[in-house]
Length: 274
Image 1 (cartoon, rainbow, N blue to C red):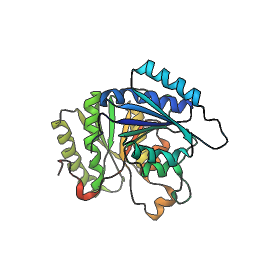
Image 2: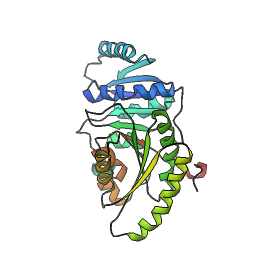
Image 3: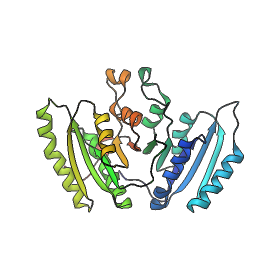
Image 4: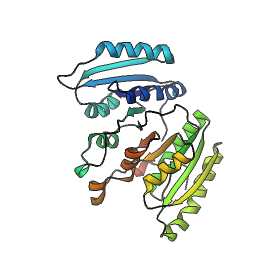
């Protein structure tokens, strides 16, 4: 799986500081992929549509970035609308700023933000921190033994080439499960070798911990990392329906931008890593 070039990046906004950060976070990606920005403002019934503010913002972005920018402005629900518009416009990426009060842990997984990311037709970058930087020098690649885990390697290598970034493979395993660790280490070396053969600097780190998301975010902050690339989980266990998946928690707690990718169909998948 790779990001499409000469395409569109969709950015749903509500004019919050978080939204503006999401827009500016997209400048380099749009330039590197030769893509246009689509700024989408969806307002609820009874609230202002802010059409004039949207047009002013568009002109500011064009002047600041030199990019091709289009806008959408209509009434509706922003989460319900985002996936539909991404399909309609054949977008290659969605970038969204999430306020700190938007949480995924809700009864039976009904949170709208979680639902829209899981159903997104393209990768989604979520940004929580209002201090998000626009550099991308160190990219974290969380890894486990699931078949889906390696699907993000292609995009990771693509982004590393775009930004001249280093990839950091991070694997978290239960401290008491030595069998899992022993099985995992040779696989990590194989993935690391594959990435280096593509001309990308790469390191790997194994971390004994019980909470995967917390361990990865902690590592990201301690090692000046700029992006976490993760796979979503399509099917939830009963416990995850109530407590949320690891990927949901990652987006929920991370102050580092997170790129979430939905798994492809297994029969159509091939990476070159065996």
